[in-house]
Length: 289
Image (cartoon, rainbow, N blue to C red):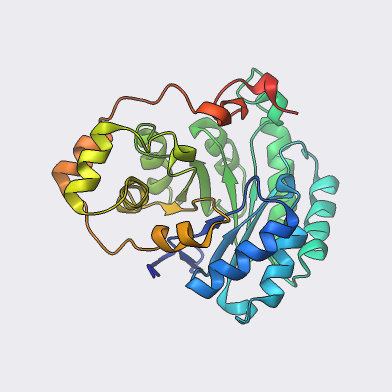
């Protein structure tokens, strides 16, 4: 089991590998968390929008590992853009999961999903959201705070007025779609980058060029993609409810050569995410409910 960690800017320790739970319902989430923890995972990622915080919380309580050994992330819903709504949502997340604290709380998106990457950037509203999260951090309800899907100017907007700097920016980052400039900007500002969908929801599994490098390293395409992000200094949170996939994803004790990393960096940008293209970070936001 790959169990290396990073340090966040506030000194907190975060596992480099986590379990994502997007599109996993409550019942599945409980089983997935229990299975993942039994394999050795200690980092679980959920969100208010996933509607599975209760299942994740039940899995945490039933997994047989002490709470303080686990790192739990949830995300403030993208549609919540004022102080009171965010503060209330944090309390609701704690109650749903049955937890005394959240290890990492992040803003799911700088804009509501139906306005994702549109003209209204919600700069002032996000400052208000951030203030609510800073206050939750000060009271100990959350141990670290961060962002998700924030572009450089979105991050700069928070940095310009914040009392506590963001510790994380969780973004789409994988072989064939790696925003290197944004990653470098965050890292220069002591913001750890987390990669969601690090295997592109399977859309890269049949890429012949990637498969050649995976075969050369004696690993699967999925393992290669996870290791690629880790070698860029990122956290990876592959989503699965399948224990066999969890085990394979956790076998990452190999090193990709500099030459192969350079090749992976230059893989043609993916154009089609298949069935997942409806989600705004992958495709047409007007298909989101």
